[in-house]
Image (cartoon, rainbow, N blue to C red; front, top):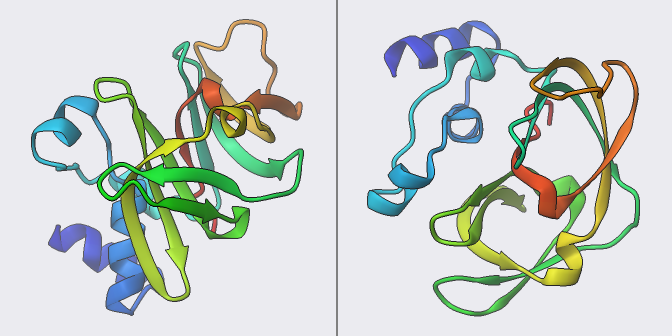
Length: 166
């Protein structure tokens, strides 16, 4: 942890909240760990990779590149798993969406004002059909998908989407 913090400070992240947000947003997530303890592991490469977004689809395709935004404008509507209250998330506030297949909910990380939030949500079914654009620079296990070609994906197809460049 101290090595990650030291590297982030050297890269210009000096505020405690900025460092915390960077480490949490880029951490390795695993459905088994989330179920047992909500624990995560540090991913130094992603923490230091300020200009690259990550996308992993449910089919195992992994991409590094740039999130280009949702095709349709509007909030993502979801219900908080713990409270049941409805939540409206705007695209600029989004940092990460991770699908926990063992529990059938999404861990979403986002910013509200200056507060970094990390909660479990049930995304409304019609909002899972929202499409977004992603420009991959590198691909792994993606079949005939090509790098440097903007592609559209549905939120329902996302296993992990990390907007690290924000």
